[in-house]
Image 1 (cartoon, rainbow, N blue to C red):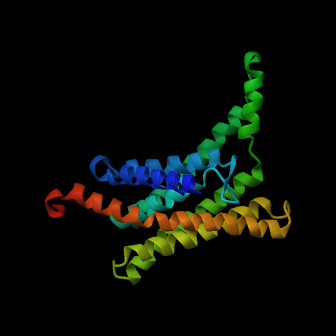
Image 2 (cartoon, one colour):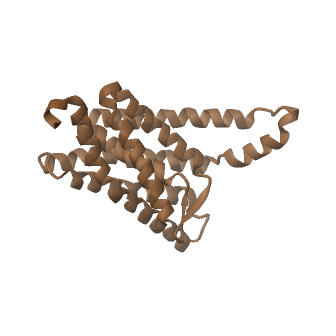
Image 3 (cartoon, rainbow, N blue to C red):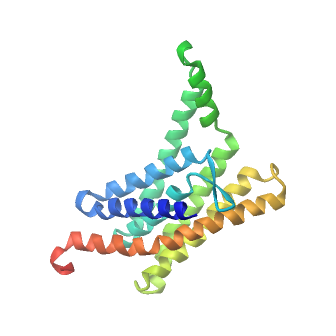
Length: 232
């Protein structure tokens, strides 16, 4: 468990640094990192790992970090940039799926048969899993962008911690319920389905709560880079 939270903190730290530096090098960097992490999360999700006694996909940390990015983008640059990140991530995943399918269908070279078999086993995609992933992504990430700004308006720009957590925790619930239901309903017993939803959601909420300090660090760092004299 300690190892898991160490990886969470390291991942959130790296993401926060890159997003904060977007002020200096361009917001496109933050959007690009967001898209990259969504693709990586889907690629490594085929490996299942345990956190305590809860089974989760290996991509749970990097995917959860994407909600921090859209919140920071929304807080600093506005809702439209959060929407751009979601759209960019969606098309990045579509292209990634097309590339993987092409590689799977491509006849392997005679000298690479064993490697090709391992590749097919790891990257083999099912239409149902891909469909569930895409639907869950669009619903949860879009909700996160709009919910963040809903709470920002309601609180008149105060209580950053509230809009960060309120938007992300609900969005993660939408993502978990949608993906697991669409992907596994009818495949596993309903009690197992509910157990999968509950277990993965608990882990995602824990990560969401941990990302709150990093939200403050990212916004403070951005302000310091934008106006060094004001932050000194």
